[in-house]
Image 1: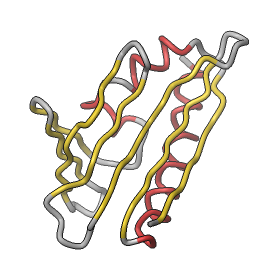
Image 2: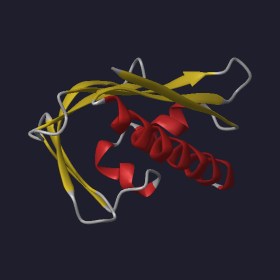
Image 3: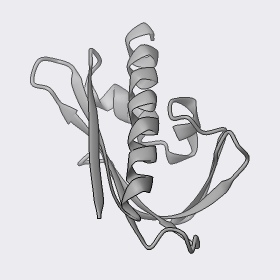
Length: 129
């Protein structure tokens, strides 16, 4: 199984960062997606290529500032768990950690690249606001 993790330090308090990160219908504002649609415990994301992925929302915990999801309904993906945490860095800022465990392993690298790009954009958005 492929396991990847990316993180970024953001000079904004964790609650402010979580207001954007924890709004699962707004992930396309900082992650390289074109849209997100949420209905109950389901989410559909659209990639810039137009491909749509269905996801099950596993955890959406405001007190932990954590969300987890599984990509489902795609025969090419045999196992997946994505996790995003917004942590207090102890100095008034945040550390955002995005990790993925995935099979086939090679697809985890694709998500790692997207996560790195997304976290970089999230930092820029949060530190300007």
